[in-house]
Amino acid sequence: MTPSRPYLMRALNEWILDNHCTPYVLVDAGIQGVQVPQDYVNNGQIVLNVSPSAVQNLLINQDGLSFSARFGGVPMEVYVPIVAILAIYARENGQGMVFGSEAGAPDPNQPPEPPTPDNEPPKKGGGRPSLSVVK
Image 1 (tube, rainbow, N blue to C red):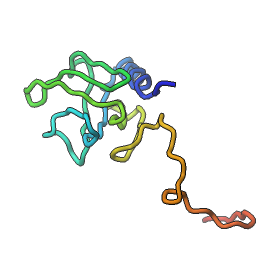
Image 2: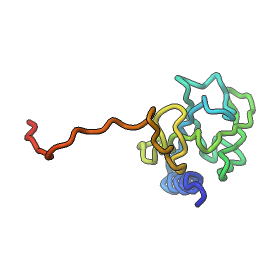
Image 3: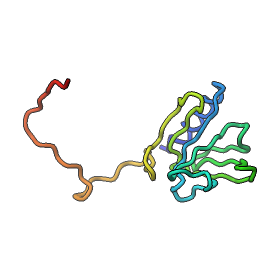
Image 4: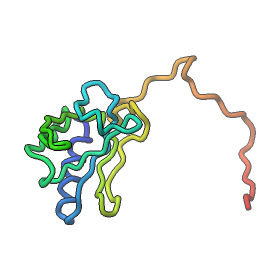
């Protein structure tokens, strides 16, 4: 199966626009291949307004998101690999989807690494399960 993130990005972008809201995309600017204006990167992330009034030639495909825009009056070609997109949401109400929250989040469509002795999760103690009341 191909990754679902590009399909979800296109659908959510259309849904946000159909509801007369402004689509914003949260990007991990530290991922290799990200081409964004570095002056606007904050804590390794940048939020991009991808509404039709803000960008030209928006393309969301299997590889990434690209468009032309002006930042501080300076024209720029923006490119974001699909794995660097952390979220897409409506500016007005925050409705949307988060794809990853930590920097360098792996593509959720890739299978996880098999456990090795170094990265194996700690084993829980044996015995009978029990419940307790928490107040």
